[in-house]
Length: 537
Image: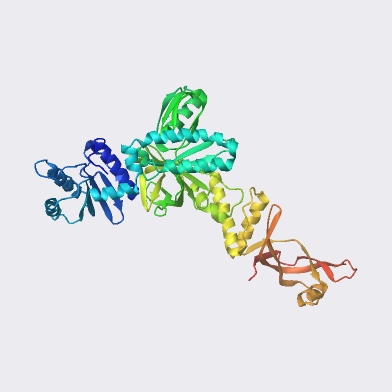
């Protein structure tokens, strides 16, 4: 490659080589040199440390008379202030023996390795990435535009069959992707014959090296809808959020994008939205935390990132709790270094109490005078956000959820939370919970009726009852059942201990065959009218 080409000025050289380094190192960050890049044209933050690339477009020799050695020395000195683990001089010159001696002497005083990437290295990289010189030196953008027109005309190929069209569009796509260094292109053929084209950055930061720009004229009245639409449009630019601007607010707009996508348009509905990034943030641990006025942590709700978008002002991050109940939206403003948090809660129709408990507990701790902050990897981000006082319904919900969770955890019987509970069901839940946690309930009784096998009348207690005597501490066992709506759940057995019992009556119960093998028994209190009930072991 001819690095003395007059089209290859310092700006074009830096643009082209910066894109090359970004393609080789996806983590690369280009430093804007408008205010002085401090010895860093491109930096690559790696786990092992920071690597710095200094780009010089020199094509003559590096001698003292030209001042080029001083420029390289100053750049290295400034780069060293950032404590890099490696520094690279990228220049389209293969060094002479004398230049190599000078370079080695210059870099010997620094503890990090310094490497001269010269013409041979650049020629090799350009051969591996031919779209770079094509784009920056050979005007391949004109060819890209011509190909896009050709792709548009390919809709006529539908007359020869969809398969033929797909093959031809695929071939055009492959040619197009060999030309543009910043973006790759994908296509889809719709049933109506239209061809949709989408752009994808080849590397992180490509959208900064070749930005997609949107401009236009909008008319937003001072109405509620107008203000809402204006703010949504602003948010889309600032944070990459999706929005639709109704046609009545759009006078005209223009789009400047690679391959001359876009153009000038008069009115119409405008849909804007950055690409949603759903890549898992494996190294990021999020949570929402509540502290009281004394700084004590009252609630801590773990979260996971679901999607994120970015714009010119910052990023918007959407998070959920681990049960998918809480939805938290956080906007990070990179210009002010502040974060704004909003959250909402959506109770699912069917869920276990243990899934809802963390969120409802969090809501119950949202009391006046307390603040909520977002936590990232154990550190709180930004100032606390003031919280309104929680209402009494949240506390009531928390209480019933705790009780239901206890019932399920102790019994091992799990069931979804009913949508509504009657007063009778509330009472039943509390009573069942008391039995399961080992409490004994003592009450008064006036009679009890039950059915037993006839053979049970041979037991000593029933023999004594049939003789008209009072029996102390008679124990009867029955199922512990929780009934919620149309569902019932058997959770164990209860022992009912009657302090004093007398027999009121016995009556035969005939089965379908006419055999009388069971009897109805009715008992009444003796001297003591108390009965105690507890969970059977």
